[in-house]
Image 1 (cartoon, helix red, strand yellow):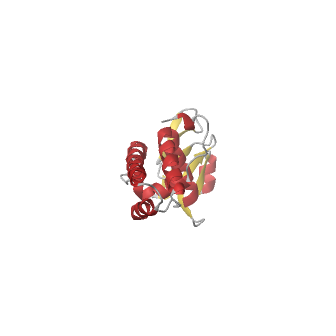
Image 2: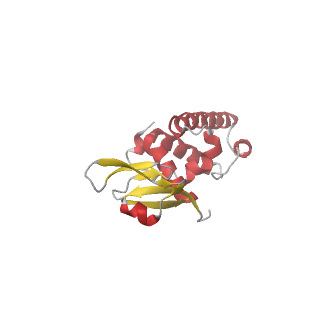
Image 3: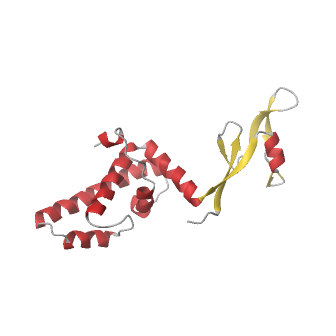
Length: 170
């Protein structure tokens, strides 16, 4: 992944992040009344010095940093998602596949395996059930309209380390 900044946010002195398009913040100014302080002048974000005077800085995110933050949020919001993705990732590993495996590759690996027909049927059903569960869990937290299949590689890449709490979810 490129180290090019793909997202900028404003960060206040407490570490809270604000959308870069935030039009104002409430701050105490020369008189002690909280006021709306514009962050843009003539359509341009104020200078770093002017933002610093308001207790704000601009923080840039690379795509990797943005993805890590995004997917960590998904997993925090729905721990069952991590369990299902972990199960799917383990199943791919048993088939000798990676996170980038397509559905055709998964099907071919199951067919080419040394499993009995009953085991192949069971494994195929397990794959379908896991994908369905991942879709449900992902859509419940993402709100991006993409199917989980489209981001499954990232779901696996940013999967948090397993803890005793996450391993209890079934």
